[in-house]
Length: 294
Image 1 (cartoon, rainbow, N blue to C red):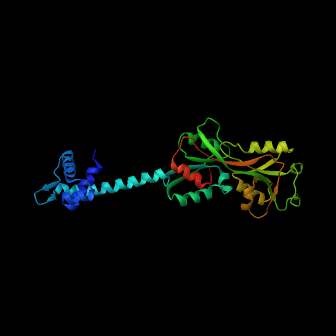
Image 2 (cartoon, one colour):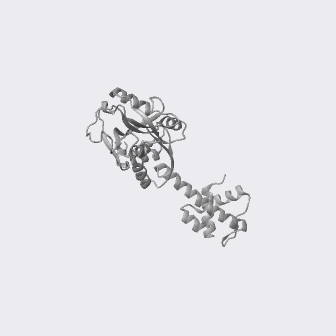
């Protein structure tokens, strides 16, 4: 294996064609420098310099090696600089998973924007994944961070912090019979058409919603299904029924949709940022800082 220090010495001597001047530039004595050059020649099995009392000159082999040595040293410096950026969290790669609410509630985008300003050289990979799958991929080191609907179980080797907790609101068509009511009671929601979000492959949200509605005193008649909450609002706008959505979605609703608060519904949308407990990389801390997390 080549010694990069010896290559650096070789380049200096080759450029000066003078051991004394090269030694002065390198801040070493002439004798150790000459010895290092001879050791490099011995290691490579080739004579790199023609030596005389007056001067030292590169052989043809030395000239051929000089170009390669300069390229190698440039690459070594680039690798060293990259490694230092890795150490400060300003370079590398991050794979981030997220549930749809992280995008809809304007949690993920500001964090990404802030992180990109601080660490523009970090390559980001974003993957829309369910909570359980994110936990699995974090454990397998296929993800570095994840936005999930719930925190990980204790002992899973994962750490997390809550980033958002918001209530659900009732979305209804603007011409719905209940549109004139400023305050909606749970018993008023019986025998109306409802729109629910069907998530694949495993729907973990709708059962919780139905259970919360039943605790409030009614069972929603789900007539239509949508692939995501924003799509459900489009169906509401079309007059096909009512839906419960996270409150932050009210700013993205199409025309023809009214919203009412339902403080009696004991179900909220919570978001958590999750990472491996043993992942002490600076880039993880950088992202948490960008996301304004402790």
